[in-house]
Length: 88
Image (cartoon, rainbow, N blue to C red; front, top):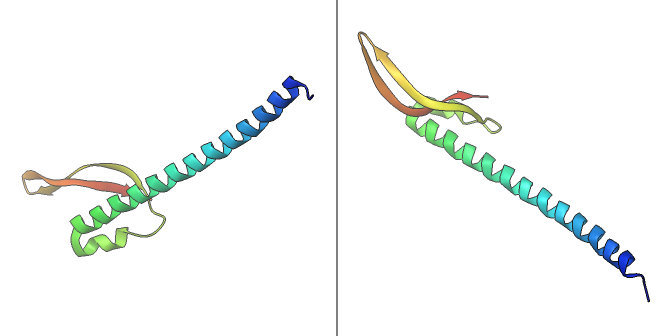
C-alpha cells in the first residue's frame, strides 16, 4: 500500500499545476477583453470626430487618458463632448 503522504503530495502537485494554468488562461482572457473594449472606445471616438476620426483607429493603438474636451471660440468656451484625448 502506497504511503498516504506521498499520494497526497502527488495530487497537490497536479492540482497546483492545473490551478496555475487556469490562472494564466483567465489572465489572457482578461487582457483580450480589455483590448476589445479599448478598440470599441476608439471606434466611438472616430465616429464622434467624423471624417477626420478614421485616422485615429489603427490596430495596436490604445487609450491613455480620457476626459472632457472643450471647443474654444472667441470669448466663449463650450463643451465639445466627452471624447478620448490621448492615443499611443
